[in-house]
Amino acid sequence: MIATHEDPSADLGESAVKASPNREERNSDGELRAQRDLEAVRSIAAPLAAEHGLELVAVEWSSARGSQILRVTIDRPDTDDDGDADASPGGTDPTAVAVDGVTLEDCVRLSRELSATLDVEDVVSVRYTLEVSSPGLDRPLRSARDFRRQRGRLAKVKLRQPASDGQRVLRGRLLEVGDASFTMDVDGNVHDVQLEDVDEAKLVFELNQKKQAPRRRKSKGSRR
Image 1 (cartoon, one colour):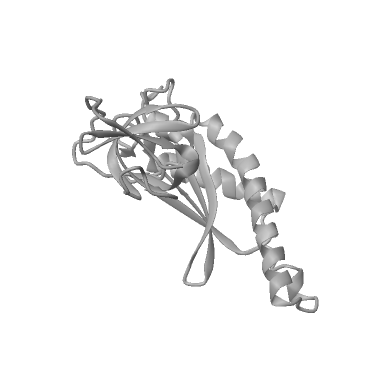
Image 2 (cartoon, rainbow, N blue to C red):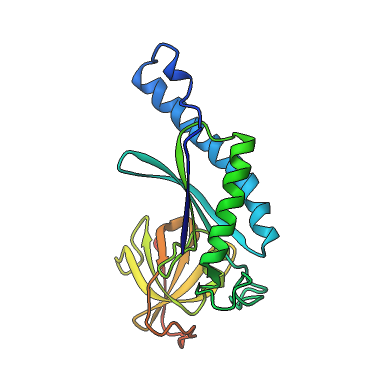
């Protein structure tokens, strides 16, 4: 589910009227400015999402055909760590189609409200297109809470260093999740993984997405 809004009024930045700095200074200033913009957008988007019973998952920059895209990802929060939704999909239209609890109506509504607020607050320093969407079926997993709410589901985890059996990419079902680590069943073997060892992780799409609790077998930990 995606809703977009283009902002044609953002400031092009001081570099348009001042002498251009060297490349290293320009890159450093650009990175700092981009991070400040993201933090400002997060502080605005999170409470707006909460007003509609939604949760802000991520705010990030991406680019497409030379254009800057401000991507805002929302989800519907759970009431507990088992991943059970605390309410039916949002929106007033009973025919609205939902993906993981977020409807197109949710995305459109938040996109309109957020874009209007960003225009007023003027916190983004470059031209951009706002994109509000749900995490999708192959959503990324970034925090312990992300892993916890997806227990029992199939995930693909890329490690910063090999596990004890030499694997750097684990594909299996998520089991227990703590604050700093989690376990997953990979072909019948249970791996203990430290969150700090995870380079990238995301859910793997399954046609019948039913959370399961595989029987535990031999345990293997990630190599420190």
